[in-house]
Image (spheres, rainbow, N blue to C red):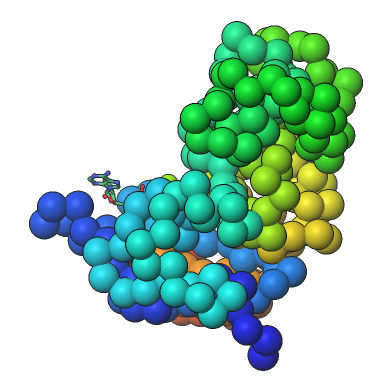
Amino acid sequence: MSTPLLAVENIGRRFGGFVALEGVTAAFQPGKVTSIIGPNGAGKSTFFNVLSGVLTPSSGSISFKGKDLKGTRQHEFVHLGIARSYQITNIFPDLSVHENVRVAAQAGQSRYNIWTNRNRFPELSAKADAALEAVGLAGKREETAKFLAHGQQRALEIAIALISDPEVLLLDEPTAGMGPEETKDMVALLEKLATQRTILLVEHKMKMILGLSDRILVLHHGRLIADGTPRDIQTDPEVRRVYLGQNDGYA
Ligand SMILES: Nc1ncnc2c1ncn2[C@@H]1O[C@H](COP(=O)(O)OP(=O)(O)O)[C@@H](O)[C@H]1O
Ligand SMILES: [Mg+2]
């Protein structure tokens, strides 16, 4: 196997006395789609926060292309090529679609020039347009973000994450709150993105996950209870017991 892009070794994360993640070891190979599933509160978002530098682990180590990321700050994760979107929609509602992405591009230039650095405006503007094109929102460029449909807002967040041209894209429940039509569009977008990037996904929609993923990790009470292909996971008795059996979306 090649050197993993991203790897965690025996990762743990506590909040006070509460153990949200414990003893998680996993490695992510380039070009693959990996989904992380598990019941609510299993530690999926916490795992993403650790993998994207939002939270430092309480124990264990994380590495990118074999380099230990101890002490690396969140904005440096983005520069390394690790970007993410959040479970909750996270855009500027009163800015236009294009401005939302351009602001993100400006923020990426310098942490101190989010609003003021206009000398590279044409270049940043073009970058923003390319990101909108990649998620199918070019036609909504001038729309005020709050007037977009929910599914389009989630696509906009992905455009924002794409601004840094990440090798690894972490998406936390990108289809949350979507009906079947919007979900179908999002799956098509994810399939397209997956041809160019390594994707980590937290999702609940089992049919979608089984179809889209090269690999699935299952978290339960902060521990990794399974790690395998969709077929492995579907037939794993422990997984069925703690998760799949109670998930209506499983078919
Ligand atoms: N910042 C925090 N402070 C305290 N507890 C937290 C914090 N973030 C998450 N938790 C707790 O850790 C557990 C795992 O949360 P989370 O990772 O969000 O789960 P999931 O995304 O799988 O639903 C939950 O019990 C949650 O309440
Ligand atoms: Mg979560």
